[in-house]
Length: 598
Image 1: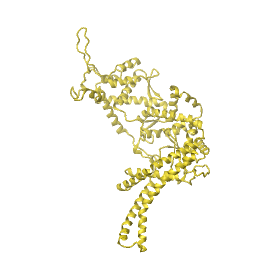
Image 2 (image 1 turned 60 degrees about the vertical axis):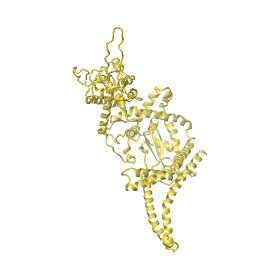
Image 3 (image 1 turned 180 degrees about the horizontal axis):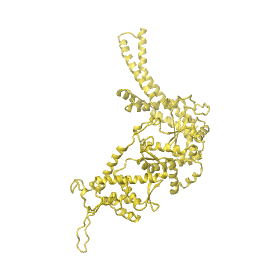
Image 4 (image 1 turned 120 degrees about the vertical axis):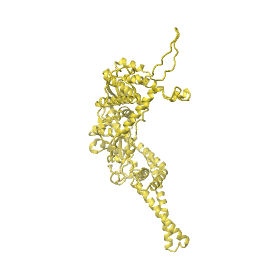
């Protein structure tokens, strides 16, 4: 009963959308109809006289102009290419078991099977209509699923494409994936209805027409004509927006009700895995993949990394203890003939969507395997950041030693960073015997005196809220920000497109940026941490490592250094080197020794 209710609601909303289309067509034809009546009345001697003569001459050109405008708008709406989600297509030859599972699922749900399967580097699954002439061959005959007409369950060009989140294939078991896909595949039933399909095509065409009219270079007509087309398309889109939203809700409700009878108990467990996979995928991208992307490398096995990250999470989190036992079951990626190749393609697409990298590998955009990640990404990242930090110090004229009389070391040292960022101590005035010397604020050093002792006329509390406590920190952080901006401006790889990626706009890359730009203080803390790690590797035998949940990590005596960050922040934010110096001494790290940089 719920299936029919949801389907009928979707169909009624689709008819409402189509009525808006019909009204727009009627408005466009109305001047022509009036002109035809006036011309016919004059030829039959019914509408004669000066008034009707003027009316005929006035209405005829108006009708022609309106018809031309309506034809131009209809042509743009019909010819505009709807947006297509960037995905990795999966041919049936490369995944026969996956296609067989989806086809069997469609048979159990009594709906048409999807026309094709594709993967997206995200934790989501949906149906996508790609029946536009620009996307493939013309659609085959529709089937009235809602009216109850049943036919052979075969894949046709009219059926939508099933898009599956690639992390699901690697983390979920086969039964769990089938349970998660059941309500998605069930949506092919309402989608096959002619009214719903026509309403969707109309809405997608309007959306594409708005994009064409508003994008410079895509509209071949004059700017005024493009603006007019865009205005009309937006007006129609606003008119049918509520009906289209309710139509999609009805389709989703009908699909969900139909899927209730398929693996209902397993669907509850599978939904837990969806949330867990999303958490692991997000953490893997932000903590592990993002540092590699910034270095010009892209991990070629991101989906396999999800399994490693979630397995590690199951060992740390009591809430996830039961999930590790599932790993003995058959993973859904076994449904692919070459899961490694598919994972690599999905990983490259993820780097393009979330970071804006090139569409193809190259000398400055090379893949990296997980066993090479510590040496190829972590070590290189630390040494590159440390080298940038010392270059900025050189630009600022910072000496390698606090005493100009001391000869400089043979290379860059961590001591240079510690000495520069440490807040200078204030000389204490002499005190009488038995009297403690008064404590006062630290005196500014030579570099921090920029505008006199008073600085400005702001109140002390306001100045403390806006001005950094350590002027050297602010100057160095600003220099790092400017240096990094110059490097990114000169080293950004040229965007390249392929036939698949040409269907979406490269100018907006990355489509889904992972994190906002880092602040100057965050950049400085990252660079100081990198210098500490370089000193640890070169003077104390530490090694770079990969933590699946936290990304690059420093291994000191075989154990992960988890207490380094607060000590670095104490130096960067407060100018206090004592906690970091104590940690260096405890770890056997020699800050005065030169380190190797890139």
